[in-house]
Length: 387
Image (cartoon, rainbow, N blue to C red; front, side, top):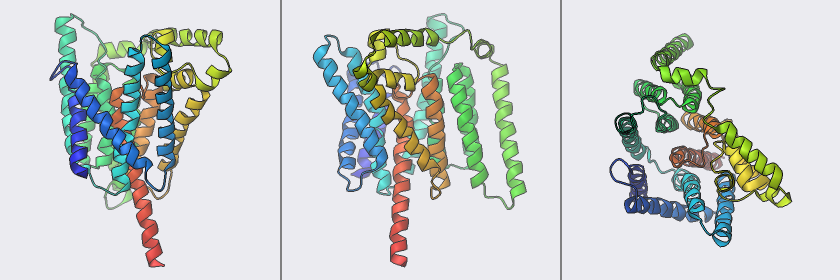
């Protein structure tokens, strides 16, 4: 039952993200989404029924409850709620994906073989989608230079690659492919997130490499760094559009400066004590200013106020505390560290909780965090028996 349900869940995730490639958005897409949200809800209840409540689960649950309350308020006071429902589904999809994998991790259930298959399928799907979007833009819309948003999907797979702890050669191969697609996508924020993730991977390899002495380990790490940096430089130099976007980053902000100015002007005119504490409500940035803030911190404090911002920051702080915990295994430590760093970089440049593909991060968070708690629990039990 436990394996069948999780296989069903991850299969539904693959099915959901296949929309637009294998089928058109519509009923099929909504069926997959309903399955995912239902399974996540089922595990959310199971996690809440556990005797020992974890801080992370409590904070994430409170943040989701705020979204549920705001959704109910919007449904009551607004005539057109399609945007609110859409944003709620994305946020719930992203954050609730922690619960199934936390439950499996806390119970010590090994699903890495299932993760391996999921990683390969999602990686292939991302490649197909990337090239499909490239063809649509170049052939049907006659666009020569454009930004491919599917480039972020490859970066978001990096923490899962670390968690799976594949052989070094296989990891390096996947990372080189990820570098290639990230540069080809011309997403500047994705490149920043990728570089942060690669730094974490190099640190992980330095700790995990099974070599006779420190000198050989250092030499191998230097070779890996030069390989990544050399390939990264080669890809950038051969992509004039990406170089143009990077060199003109101060003049080409993709209207983020306009969006932030609009949000600031609205906030200055309309804020009061209630909005300061509770925000302007679910999808407030879109409803009042026409677009997402493209920054999680601004998005959260505008929509949910200081209360929601405290919950959001608490999630990141709890993850950071888990990373620096001395009893965390290297694969768990560095998968969580890469997740946290990519979350921060993507959260400041694009947004995490407002993107459905961010569930790739919360899946890793849920399983790594739960597995670590399981390991600590087993260590305490063994120490008790030893005494």
